[in-house]
Every structure is written in structure tokens, then in C-alpha cells.
Length: 290
Image 1 (tube, rainbow, N blue to C red):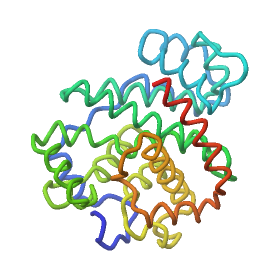
Image 2: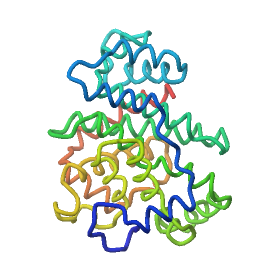
Image 3: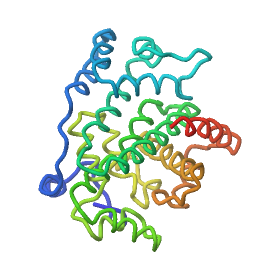
Image 4: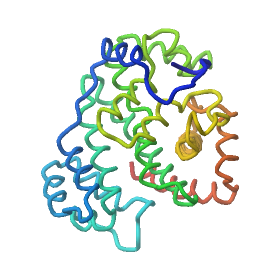
């Protein structure tokens, strides 16, 4: 299932799932992710229990404080402790932190420098998506952040599994071939398929997994509601815009989002030039802290 193929089903097929498990080692859901999601379902989440669990992981604690001090949540008073950070973030955004940190820690077996760069980029895109969502009606910033962070999370898994992955992608970039087309041409499965299965196995909301599955479809903005809900299209749209903004900020050629998708995303969200400039300024400051 990839770009250019007709999509009529929100679910992964049995063949898709079998192919992924045959070729890719999908990380199991960490206990801390299950705990955070379980607490998020409660009427009265035990924040102290979550704080204690997060404080045991130095990387997760640092990421919690960093997100609380990001443009998505920053006030005039920065926070320096996990408990205060959790109070500012709220339970739904705590899940974002836990998922982000868990993703980083479970993606091993690839070049550390490349992986650090990959996650720094993913974090910036997620922050941008959250900022864009805050300016929209009906798009939860926590869902936008989580989707943006997760939508390309399978790329390190593909790199780990296939020794020639980086070389294939490098050659595709040189000839301006879309990433998804290169994956379809050279590998048995693509990062949207692997990523959607990873999201499902980790118990993320169904619409996030569906958005991951469809985010490279060429006709994603024309799909009927019965195929892909408007809420899922909106998650894709904020991330398409976020990807382009981060690419412009870093003066890189964007390899993920076509010009057509970018314009369709702006139209879908009705984002003004003034709003884009405001987000750019916030992101420029944030990127200097990475």
C-alpha cells in the first residue's frame, strides 16, 4: 500500500501485517507508555505516580521539562522540575512526552549521530505541528504533536533492517524522487505501513495510526470521509505544513512534502501568511535551543 495505489480501506491488510513482521523488528510497547495511557483514561489520573516513573528515566525527565518550556506551553516562568512540568503540560501532553522518550530509547542499532539528528528534526516538526494546531479549531495540539512525532518513526527501523536504505534514499534525493516511491521500489514495506503498525501495537489512538498510514497518499486531501476522517486529514495537514516550515528554517530541500500537498494543506487549514510568519519566528527560537 503506497502512493499511487488506490486506497479503500482504513485498516492494514493481513498481507501488509505479515510482510512487516516478516521483515521488520517492531519494538514492543514499553511499560511506561502503557502506564501513561492507562492513567490518561482515568477520571482522576495519578500525576504523582507518573512523575515518579518519569523521574527514574533521565532522558524522559529532561524531555518533559523541555516540552513544558517549549513555545507550545511556555509562560514567563520557566520550569525546572518534573512535577511542575507535568502540572503545566496536563495528562494528555504527558502521554506525548512518554511516547517521544520511549521512541528515542527503543530505536537502537543505527548510527547514533544520525539517530540524534533524526529525533531532533522530529521533535522540531512535532513542536511546529502542535503550534499550528493551537491556532486551529478542533485539532487537539497533543494529537498533532504525537502524530507529527510518530509519522516517520519507522524510518530508523527500515534503516536498521536494510543496509542499503540510506544509499537508496540519498540517490532518490539526488534525482528528486519522492521518498515513498523509493521505498516502494526497493523495499518490501514502506515507513507509513510499518509506522501505522507500530502505532497500533503501542496502543495509540486509532486515528493517529490511520493518519500515519495515509500521510503519503497522493490524493489524501481528496479522500472521502468514509475512507479517511476529516480529523485525520487535519493531523496530516498540520504536519505537512510543519515539515515545510522546518525545511525552510534549516535551508534544506524538503523531501517529504510535495508543493501540491503543501498548498493543499494550507488551504485545508485556512492558514494566513501572518500566522505562518508568527510560527516561523517561534520555531526559529526553538531550533536554536536544539
